[in-house]
Image 1 (cartoon, one colour):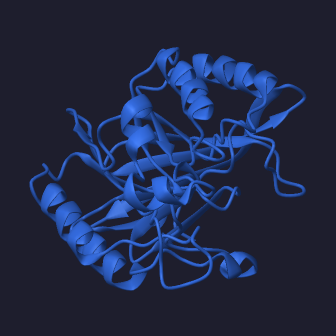
Image 2 (cartoon, rainbow, N blue to C red):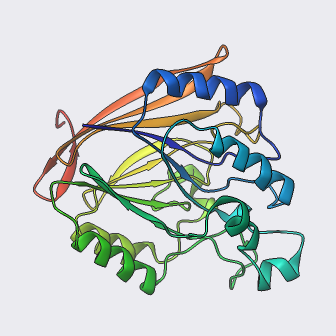
Length: 267
């Protein structure tokens, strides 16, 4: 059984120091085998924000896996955004935008869904294109079926109705069909700053809220998720900060039948 901590939307530049301390204390209790961070490491992609984020990552006492989000592209330096969009990310965080790791329990593949520009006014929107879908499918087709298969993308593959105005990831329908057929078990994301879980085409969609920033939606505290289990049974735990500590808000269990996941026990 593997234990994974899923963080998202840290937004260094708007981080809360005490919440970071509370998070590290909580992670020490959970003792994850891996920490996954699903984008928006910074607030405005400024150098000092990336430097602060790097300090956090360097002091994280666990292996970590990280992809960028739309806030990791500069919104105010347009020459940088259009011509050198990932220069700071590669300088301070990682040379990779779409990492892939594999161990004896799982395979994790990252997709960079952030775009420097798009045919819409809201450039915070993201998408997954055909080339990325093929890359992900090829990676998972080479994976032992006994391993947990995890895709990480910043933008959402599903949203509660009240948040649909924030837009699903572009290319979602084509992607989810291919990912389901490839046996992807769970897709992790962020962007919306709310935690939620949903089964779509037999794949578990799990999003984390903003873990340490002050960019909170009203009524939604800082949060992160814990994933425990294997390729047949999973427990997803959502933890929220309350009274200076992260406590369990919700615990959901899932079981896999054939290629599809279901709530457990089945309703």
